[in-house]
Image 1 (cartoon, helix red, strand yellow):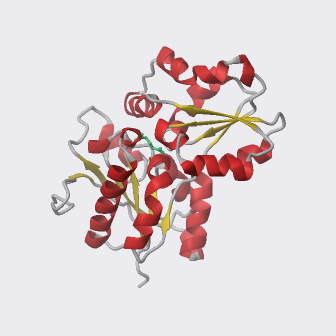
Image 2 (cartoon, protein in one colour):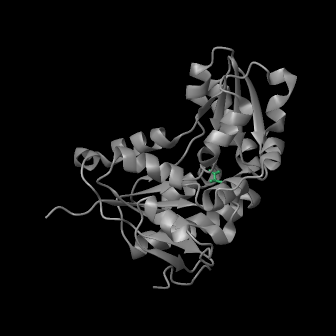
Amino acid sequence: MQKTRAIWLLDSGIGGLTIARAIRHRLPGLSQHYIADSAAFPYGNLDAEALIARVCDLITRAVATRPVDAVVIACNTASTVVLPALRARLSIPVVGVVPAIRPAATASRSGVIGVLATPGTVKSAHVATLIERFAGHCRVVTVGAPNLATLAEQYWRSNTLDGDALAAELSPLHDPEWRSLDQLVLGCTHYPLLREPIQAQLGGHVQLIDSGDAVARRLEVVLGDSSLTQGDSSAGRFHVTGALPVEAGFEARVRAEGFGEIVTCAHDPGVPLFVR
Ligand code: DGL
C-alpha cells in the first residue's frame, strides 16, 4: 500500500487557509495538517528574532510528532524572516510564500503597482529586494496595513465586516498619485479572504494578485509526485495554539475547508506540542 503523503502548514491564524485551498485544488491527493498559531496572532507585531524562534520551535516539534514530506510556511510575514533558520534545522523541504511582485510587475500596463501587506512584511529587506529585482520599471506603492489581517479573521469567522475600517486600511491607495494603479499584490495570506470587499472598494480596474497557486505549483515541483494531482487525501488535523475559538460555526467552517479533527496544542517552548 502506498504511504500517505502529507505536509504541515503554518500561519498565525486562518490566513493560511487561502494557501491550503490552492494546494488542495492542485494536489488533492496530499494530506494537510495545519497550525493556526492564534496565541501569537498577529505575527506582524512580533520582531524578527521572536518570530524565528517561535516558528522554528513549533515546526520542529510538529515534524517530530508527525513526520511529513514537506513544510509550508503559509504566511508572508514569517516567510520573509524564518526560512533560512528553519531550513537549517529540517531535512525535508520548506516552502514559503513570496508576495507576487514579479507577476504584478509583468502584468501591469500602467506601470503602477501596489503591495498590500502587514507592516512587518512591507518593511522587510525581502520585499525591497523583490521590488528592485522585478519591478524596477514600475512605480510601486507599498502599504503596511496594521489591522487588515484582523478584519480578515473577523470576516471569515462571522461574515461581518466594518466597511469604514476596511476603507481606512486601503486609504493610501486612493491618493491621486496612485490613480493609475492597475495591479495590487495581496502580500498577506489573510487578504484573499477579503478579496471581494477589497475589489468592491478599489474598483474593477485593479487586478488583485495573490500567491496561492504559485505556492501550490512550487510544492508540486518539490514533492515530484504526479499521483498527488489526483485522488482524495485523508482529512488532516487543524491545530490551534491557545484557546479554541468558541463562536458558533467555527468548527463547521474549518471542516468545510477540508480538515478533520480540530484540536488545541501547547505552544510554550519545552512543552510537548500536542495536548492530545
Ligand atoms: N497571514 C500572515 C501573512 O501572510 C500575517 C498576519 C499576521 O500579522 O499575523 O503575512
